[in-house]
Length: 226
Image (cartoon, rainbow, N blue to C red; front, side, top):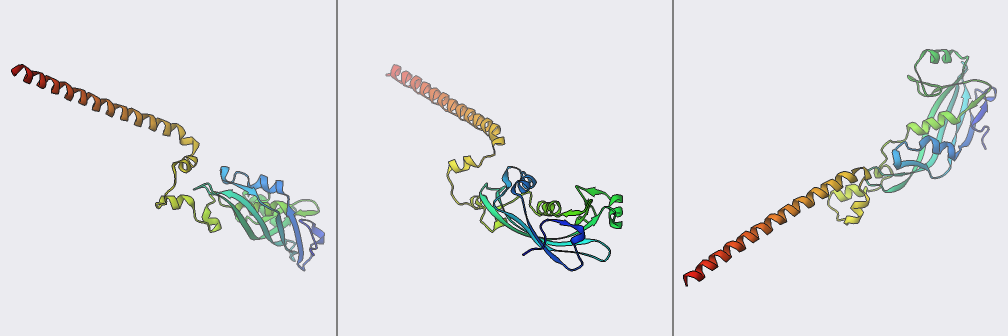
């Protein structure tokens, strides 16, 4: 059984590591990962549990060593196939009060997001009496996700790769995979090809008519001679 949830009173953190465990709410995870990969994902596919140990150093920094366990749904950016990606991410965080000496260094540095230091992205500050581990571990989840998820991320054979090396597939399947943004260009290409085919047919018909006319004229001349 854990000693703490994800919200911990800083005064309760001691030099001896104590366990924490909690769940990142689904709506919080959904908001964090939504559209990281565009329309391909990500989407929560189960609970997101964060657990680990936390302790305080002699100089007053809280050290949280945690693991995120979750599953996210996504679609391969290459072939569009849906998958569920199981994740287990470990991270170590340094958390200090706003009045800590390290926090003063953070104030002089370039900040990224909320409480993050450019040179040490796992350093966070907090104000008040409580440490909320929700935000830092949510950001840990975000930075560990690929912006271009593919089948190989879950050790699955990509359908697009299979098709590119020559495996047959029907036209309907191919049409379903066409990016709608290409539709106007594909329509124009088809129209130009149809026009080209019509021109070729017209030329062939004209040649046939010309040949037929010449043949008739020759036959007529032969008849006159006889």
